[in-house]
Image 1: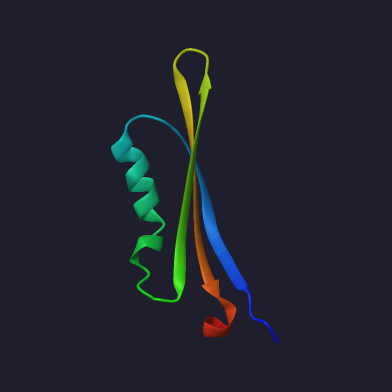
Image 2 (image 1 turned 135 degrees about the horizontal axis):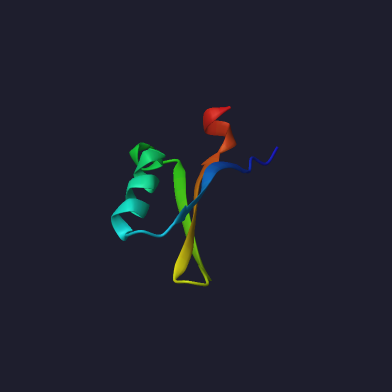
Length: 71
């Protein structure tokens, strides 16, 4: 039987105020605290511009892991 990978994660969305606020929201997920050689972390960021200088920031965080190690 071939084992694949599973994933879980968070989509975060916020109005951009400053980079520190975005970083704090990422840290609040605590995904960066996982210390395991069998996982991979993934990150993607999208910024959507709206009228009147409003920026919507999307941060997608994901943990990939081998299912045979945790199931």
